[in-house]
Image (cartoon, rainbow, N blue to C red):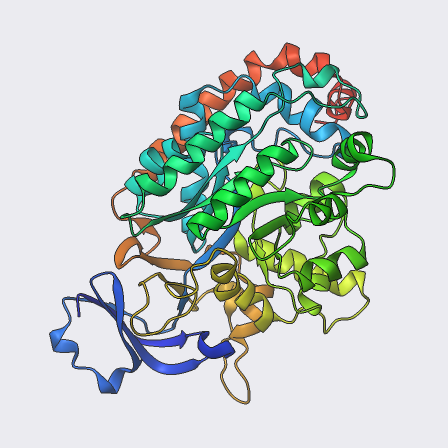
Length: 476
């Protein structure tokens, strides 16, 4: 073995079970898992690098099923706003002052934050995503599902639009983005850390003709379509204005044969129960972003209902200016608590289900379940370990039950992660990045954000969002 964590508690999460191993060892050969079992059953003298896992818990790396990292420099820039204002009056006036270097720097900040709290796979969704792959993900060594945002909305001053004003489409812009998306598949077909999906932004931002072309391309490549679906009042106004007063995103997609197993539908909080039942029956996958949608829309995303119908569900963090973080431990706890409250049922979304949502279920959503999501011999070595000798996780007991299962969801913050291995490489060891200057990126991010927010001040004030009024009152 090249590397092994020995004498640890292990959660394999294989075969829909927790797969708890006491005093276990996970051994890694190259980029694959070569051994899982009792430490007594392996010759540690034949291991090149040994990490002592005493008082540690080892589990699969976490899967963030929907993330936009490039806006992380705008963290804290669009909170406590009406949903109808968030995009055009909140984040928009700030985002237009970001340059290409800011997007890269913001992405580095977001990816490092997520890795440090246990995420090893990112479903990155953005414009010019190849730049992030080349300048952020591959240099850091993170696993990424690269999705190019395909958007046909013409370049206009969105802050000046009324919510009911229909966006104009620029089909040439959409075709250019689709070409970039197609090129991703050829560019990264031999890169083990990179896979690809198609990324039409939303039904209100892409024409039906372009969506149908995307569907044809996805079928030909046996890929998936990762798309925001029914994400709130703003989208609904666009859909009813464009397709009629009784229209909805789900109905339109179904009428045009775009609702099927190729679709990964993100958010879905403006769907009816019957629409979610239809989506599950059509084998549509769903991704929910609990903190983001709670903060931006004031709605609990229907993750539990979709899951209870038998649908496949993953969890994402969306973008930092909304929820403020890229931490899947926070997302687990958030949706678990919100669901219990919403249904007045403290048994809803128990801790063991949450652990599956951010590992193997996320891998299934992204089509990577044969490679990652569980700890099994032959799978890619994406592994994280926790220091359980921690105030938040103490006491740790295993008889008559394992209290660390609920504690991972309801007590852990992600800061307890002390080793992160991605594709067999040790990215974090004892809470420190092995080849990245974390503090340098933090310093650069602070310096650059100061200028961005200052430069955007007049545009932000002119947009007149609720946050502007709060500032005038001295509340922010």
